[in-house]
Length: 201
Image (cartoon, rainbow, N blue to C red; front, side, top):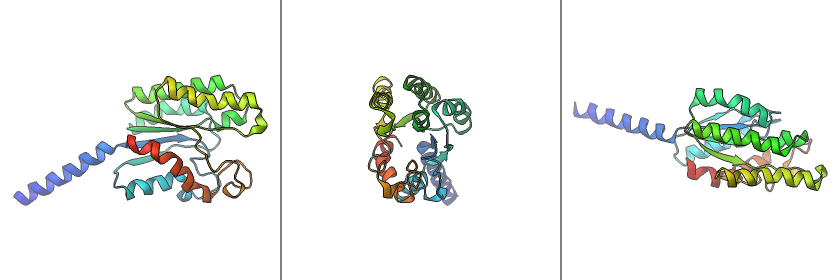
């Protein structure tokens, strides 16, 4: 009887630890969807491996869709929050907004709404910042980059200033299209994000 009670107690403890770690929901675009790669090679898969290595019992839901914009992510988020009840939401969106020349102000409004929705659902939020190539013009690229800085300040949300730091613009780390990170860049993407994500797990 005592052995059974001990086993049951240990099982409950393990369940409690897993529940505490919770679910990490990643809402992104092609960068997090591992466009052009086997998804097992992408940074999100490496993130799951890192969690196991660190002994962190978190469940990862990758809800990233290639080509998605901040408007698309905002539209999808309520159902994702209801379905997965995440403890942490990682937002990796905006690149497609910029490539399409959409107004930075609209991007900021969309991401702000996503941050608010996630927090209202009881989740913490991490924002992965993006930047645009210089050929989009100084004025637009600066306004675009400022969106993430503004949100980090106004919403007090942890920010990775440039998720593609050390990757973007490096030919050997990019696929042939010059837009999507290659397999060799995925570990760097994880290292860019991990120091900001880990304290929130």
